[in-house]
Length: 468
Image 1 (cartoon, one colour):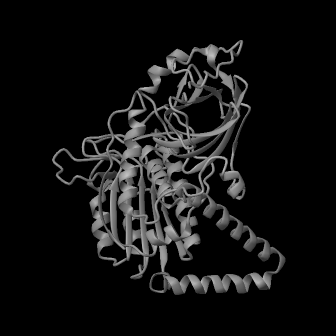
Image 2 (cartoon, helix red, strand yellow; image 1 turned 90 degrees about the horizontal axis):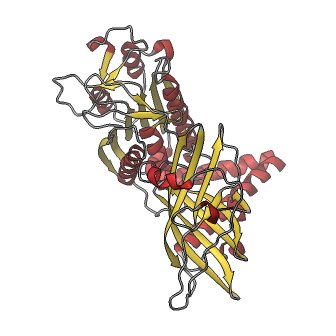
Image 3 (spheres, rainbow, N blue to C red; image 1 turned 30 degrees about the vertical axis):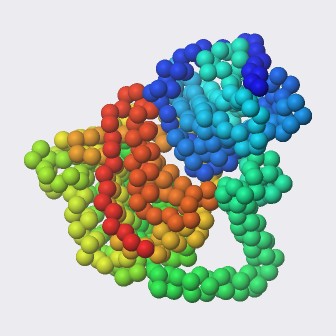
């Protein structure tokens, strides 16, 4: 049996869709990390309800439930996403493929995967997407969805999930766990509001329990976040500022979630100098159980005779300042410095060019910035930050390459945070590790570059020596 084409003509549809195929080969971009959405649409007198799980631009799937000839069916469809701009209009597209029936299907029964797209001018306005299962994107076969909304974790009840999953599926169990832990958090927050004294006792007990389970790693542990961000440079300063905000927000929340203290050191603006970086690092008091996170966002380069594969930081906030050894700082020197500090876990990250006297390259290619995130499993965060020992040094580009950025920030920075959130999400495996994060950061960055028609190759490089 062939499922009929879901075709309803939309008169007055003003966009020529055939051009999208050219762009699909060039421009897949990022969206959200483990975000859940529900979409409904109706065609040929059949109502379809989809549950979308979005990890990244290369990895998403939708469970689509519908009733056909009196029988309820569920199909799993894989998705990749794409975005671009043309003549002042923004486009975001999700292309479906590899449909597989989750429920039993009759011999010869097939499903045409659905493709979704948005288009808007200016800021994203949350308009309803359009859908078609026509691989040629004929505008006569395009309809607008009936609804599209984010699904909150509190909605993930057994009744809701059984619309899309079998109860023996790993995804079903993970989503139920997300619901359960979300409700437990809400209950604890409500209790805190109703009874401060009770809340203090509960929090103390929770803190004691956490310390007992990770006693050797949480006691007297601190996270030190060093941000070296070139916010004043004319061409990419705004993008670097976004990068710094992203990193500060995320790591501050991580420290809070795992129950350790947090201290930030920022070198930016008029203080963006090599001497300020060096004096700041010298002043950091590091305990043997501490976590160091060093992050650089700015211009980078390499000397013509340089053999070290990691870049030099361009520590100038003005193009009128001469580039010399005094206005440059080797990334490797940061690694060497922290190697003597004895922290339990050291993460060194640099989003910058690695080309001969290079300039980070800015592109107008845009993509939908991260929206909400369904949250992390705290147990996974603790495995990554409290049960791990060693170091990671990672540069956003290989020798001879540029680092690319846009209004949303650096491609490498966004890809790293995307990979981290995926690794700690409910829908991933139970044993997170930094090697997966590095690999996915590299893949996500390459994917963004391949999606950008004006960008040249960018391949993050890394050295990982972390054990649990």
